Image (cartoon, rainbow, N blue to C red; front, side, top):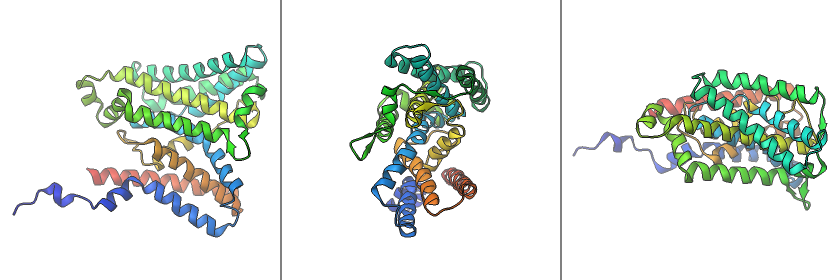
Amino acid sequence: MLVSTNVLRRKPPAAVWLGENGALVALVVLAVALSLLSGDFLAVTNLLNVGVQAAVTAILAFGATFVIITGGIDLSVGSVAALSAIVLAWTATDTGLPWPLAVVISLAVGLACGLVNAALIAYGKLPPFIATLAMLGVARGLALVISQGSPIAMPETVSHLGDTLGDYLPVPVIVMLLMGVITAVILNRTYTGRAMYAIGGNEEAARLSGINVNRQKLITYALAGLFAAVAGIVLASRLASAQPQAAAGYELDAIAAVVIGGASLSGGKGRAFGTFVGALILAVLRNGLNLLSVSAFWQQVVIGVVIALAVLLDTLRRRTAN
């Protein structure tokens, strides 16, 4: 009896589940290990602290998920977050605009940065790495110019975004979950989400199938910029001030969270839940290393190794798929 090659290669359901949820398994193993090594890890206060620490990275990473699914990359999200927060604080304090209008302008700045990135990539034909690296410098420079290099106090009303509702519900965590739901809906329930997967899978095939690739890239990078602005507002609210050097290096954490969560840097693969788990892994790892009194220098080494392993696993997955 002939048996097709596809049947022979079919993986057991458990192996498929493990392959799709490896990040979640890693998070559980990490949490169990840290709870055994430190009695303070499972304290409610500490777990809430982990959620707050993960919030900004997760929001940035949700935006980066859109870009990475299309096969692109955005190195500017940390700088765009800082610029958006500076614009909010500056317009609400120095110019005296009402804070709701200042928030809208801040979000528009993030959106505009994303659109400029997309225009350079889609119509200027610049590689995403170069276009967003340029935006990284421009946005950070503008943040320094507007603030004159000094922190600007956030409006008191907006800074409540960094507070806690009641005793146990941090607002940054609520915002993170809301942005995660929005990301999942866009990816799973909209034409734009399906177009992102198609472009990441094969851009030319997506173009031939009738997808306006350039327009979808505009939407993709605009969403990344908008999410970066939200992350910047949340971060500045936690600090009660907008700082021009804030969120430096966060773009790498965002990319790492997306890849750890199972997205492929070659495009066509990624989930909102995976990104959420990836951001939690980074936050849990940093929190656990702090509880174990590991020096900040060694923490950078450990985080770097985790990122390298995640990219290595992505490479192995793609080789296996091919």
